[in-house]
Image 1 (cartoon, rainbow, N blue to C red):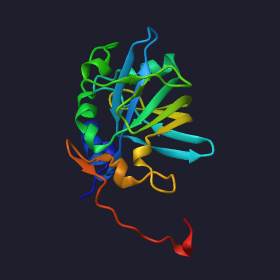
Image 2 (tube, rainbow, N blue to C red; image 1 turned 60 degrees about the horizontal axis):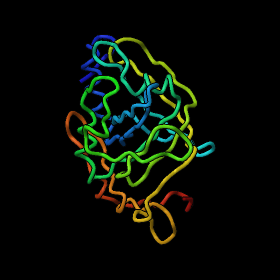
Image 3 (tube, rainbow, N blue to C red; image 1 turned 180 degrees about the horizontal axis):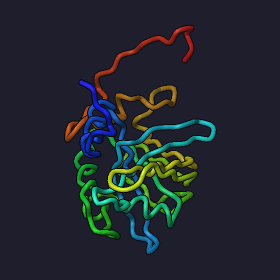
Length: 205
């Protein structure tokens, strides 16, 4: 089957993308409004970009009516955010945060999560998350316009918080202990517990 995006409804293209780009890690992003009200929402268009400087990117796509989501509105006003990493035991609260609450509704309160003050930025961290990345905005790149268009948020990590319980004997993150989840197509998720190893050519790590 061949699909030409120019001939498809945008929603159909979106479904094809989320069905084949899998599994997608989840950025559970906390921000604050200009009035200081916390916001917390998950985004599965997310990944790391670089280590020097340490940088991440995630993409809040516009709503179906073309309006921007609360997260991007907040970052435009307060250019800071926290990426909280989602482990399996927090899948439920993460999913609850995906509900479209009215602007300046506190998702921490609505979803039974604990805000933890960040050390270098204004938005709070999620206490329950085992990894929290404090970020300052590097750039927002608009890709397209209207419904389901993208807002690439590039952030520089200024402080990383990692729970001792997910570290191995060498002080590195043990993926089995972190037990992250990934987004598949539709309402399906994957759990990162089925692991295997491949040695890189040349013995490099």
